[in-house]
Image 1 (tube, chains in turn purple, yellow):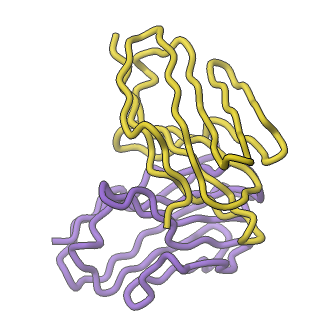
Image 2 (cartoon, chains in turn green, purple):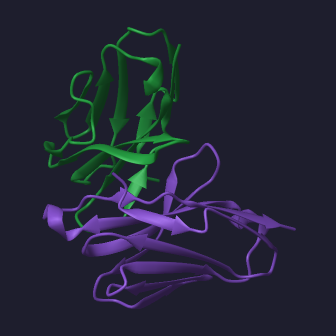
Length: 112
Length: 113
């Protein structure tokens, strides 16, 4: 049963610390999305990749966030330094062109 | 920025009733998708409708798309308590030239037994 795997599921960290979230997309999918979900802003698209190349990261705060796909089986989202306002649930999703996206279970990040 | 807005924000009905949720969006699209999210979980794809389609069915789900009005509706017939969840529409805007799923604000559906 193919699924998108995100780690960690929960992360509590202190302000100023680096946070790395990982995502294993479904094998064969060529598109990877990173979303952030909060009560206030809803689901925000942070970045997305096609065939490992970043297509759009305009939704991401550039000064502290970075997203990469070092290989086809791993996508990472890093926050350095983290701030309390970064507290949210971060979702990774993968898919193929013009088709449905499959979501991971998310990483719940709390920055204190 | 969000492309779509769902209406209503929240909907409370009894089991067996039909639930209708609406989505409005801003720019021309390749397709529109509906997703469901149970509390604390990831989103699950329900149905995709392409810009050249007007209506689509899947089980108890019926989706319509009106590109002239930039709107879509999701109808869940004979609702069940297990349908309680948040429902989101997501659009794939043409302007980007490639798939980019932008989500709306969501409708929280509560189905009471």
